[in-house]
Length: 409
Image 1 (cartoon, one colour):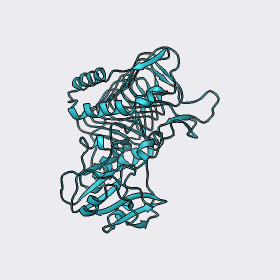
Image 2: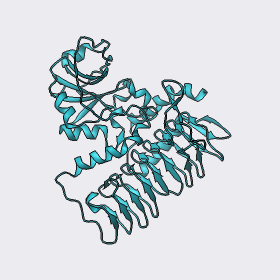
Image 3: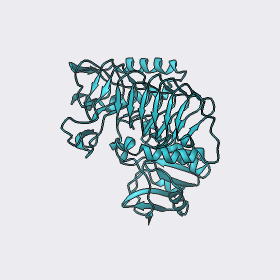
Image 4: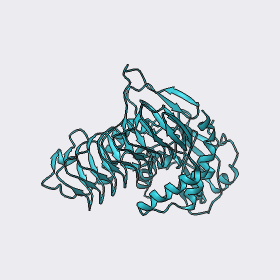
């Protein structure tokens, strides 16, 4: 039986593609508190950006009601709904595009895509979709099911995005003062600045986005992706696979981690096997543990289970939601989850789950006042010449309300 789909009425348009959230969204919290699943960054691009490049078409979102004003749904007489946790490939797209009205592509009970007419969507606000004909597929594809999938699958995603973005194009020249291994696996976009750094692309491609900067003394091993206008500071050591999203700034030592966008880990300290959402800030000399001293599998907080679950992983560091920050010399224990807009400080290891809008640290937490949190978010956005809109305020306020129960744990 297919998962029921809630549809929010928006403007009608021509035939289009819609990326929908399913129950997996809950497993991906806190990273999906502020965005649809499709806007998770994996590799160089977000999942949405991948689909739009493969399809050569814009997409809209079918997501939670409180997110729908910022990520609106667009409908047309014929609508192809695609699971936003799945990454595209040519074989998968070929099968999706053969779907007729009221047909769904499925694999192992997972709904990959559905072709619904506008009338069907109007009637499906609370309906079960068992009337849709299921078409099975054997096509393989990448998907994001858990938060840690993002750093686990990032290397392969960088390789695929690299091929997608660079096919038939010529890189900007590698400056003569840059030491480069396997230069054929390096692609530099227009406006990027590289100064006396080392690039080793022998183990995977290195992508340098437009108007980004790699300062002198930085040492980078691929697979690696640097987003547009992002900065790698002097003396930084980066082990792949790692993604530094657009407008982010990094320094110190980083290993197998993903920063979405507009986030800073600009100083010394170690970040490993971790994921930072947008607008995070990591204080100087902050360190994350990504391996337990006894080498046992790591347990990680899971929102649907409301408890820690066994990941089966030996390496897992920090999962941090949007707008969260930590002070200098913060120590994050192995397998730590931090919610949205938390402000963390204090000596010794922090607890392994810190709820959204928590203020404090090892000596205890209080609730971060929502009005103060919004004021800080506005100030941080203004520094980057980005508007923190009324829609952003509404979303942040809603997340504050729906995460109240976690602050009591």
